[in-house]
Length: 113
Length: 134
Image (cartoon, rainbow over all chains, first blue to last red; front, top):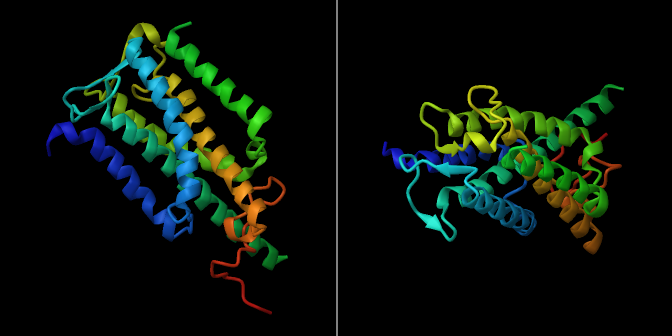
């Protein structure tokens, strides 16, 4: 596999691994697209700004070997934009999946009592 | 204090301030949030561990901008603060938006209530319930 897709493939893996949460654990994150978009947008903006500050101030840089070399303005790699969308989605799926399991557990406990 | 370290600490303070002063979701009082964060951090270590491993790093840090504390493997400790802020802010907005849509059309059951006093969602009508009718 071409090394420069490594970062993107890692992100794709994150989406793939968390996808069952939407259906098996009924997270219903993708099925509420408006709420999802409105939750992601401010976070994307804030953390892109932070990323730009980090790049400009030299806090971090990105491997030329493991990224595609495609940049959005301010020298931000495309992969970083993907990261700030994918990881919050994974977090939301986890949160909602935990909510489902807690709901089941409470129901089961209620039955037991 | 190194700059990334300072910004990471500031982001945590900003996130907590956003909750206390503005969003007020009550998320920090929810078991659902803390359990989710523990799970998220387990996966954070795997993904960030891959991104930052010094043998073949995808993200390369300037040693003078971080404390240099890396745990486990080569993950800068600052990344855990960064992760906390990013994920917590996302979850707070998600919960807050659930509150709003529930309030607007009055169907708390449809969007799932985000009120801190009621975290279970077994009353939702749009999903099959495992509970048998008496």
